[in-house]
Image (cartoon, rainbow, N blue to C red; front, side):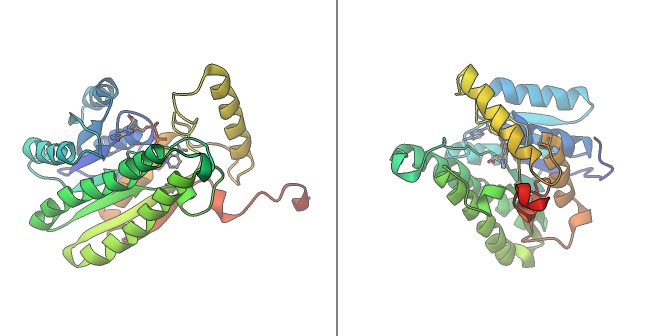
Length: 270
Ligand SMILES: NC(=O)c1ccc[n+]([C@@H]2O[C@H](COP(=O)([O-])OP(=O)(O)OC[C@H]3O[C@@H](n4cnc5c(N)ncnc54)[C@H](O)[C@@H]3O)[C@@H](O)[C@H]2O)c1
């Protein structure tokens, strides 16, 4: 899939760009002409994204950083400005799931880590990028939330809480920074075929197979009847970052194959 949107001359930061949605978004932004700072906690994955962008004729740098670490976030923003002369686009994509447990079974440290990565990480990246937007006269932020921020989903208390938080933070930032020509929007992906989507690399082979099968079955019941490829989210992030979306701010955009527009009616639909 390709895009015809031009982001020539723009500089972007994508967090969690070593894999999945972040990687696809970084590549889609670069294909549209943006120079991209690929940031991730896994150096080899980030380096692979950078190599794929440069091999395709694009421009990218890698910064090793945990979004929950304030000093590392500052370094990501500084390196982007040093390499590209500024920053115009921020994609707050890095996020973790936090395991499948009901809240009374969740360890406090595990809940806190999801808050740190998903919410505090979004705060840090936004806090240190916005001064550059203010200096240059505008910018765009796309927060990658989730359909799980719109509904209550089973056994995902920290994830649902943080994604709901990101959604309303998006609206709040749109209010504060609209007058500064800074647009802030969020995407709520549904079932996307990534390692996080398949519940992460920590599963055993059999758990992974079972989780993948459950997920494919659930996706098959949604209106579009399948999981998406990460680039199908990346393309929407590119559009929201582009002049084509110039009157969009505070928008919460579902990219979910129709998932939250309905529920599965099962036999009742016959
Ligand atoms: N896959 C889905 O079905 C789905 C659905 C809804 C929302 N999302 C959201 O999309 C985003 C990307 O998810 P994905 O499915 O591509 O996941 P993924 O696990 O495939 O990729 C996530 C990337 O983020 C990096 N990362 C993790 N913690 C980080 C940290 N603290 N700092 C910086 N980088 C970090 C990982 O190393 C990895 O490269 C997440 O915010 C996730 O919640 C995914």
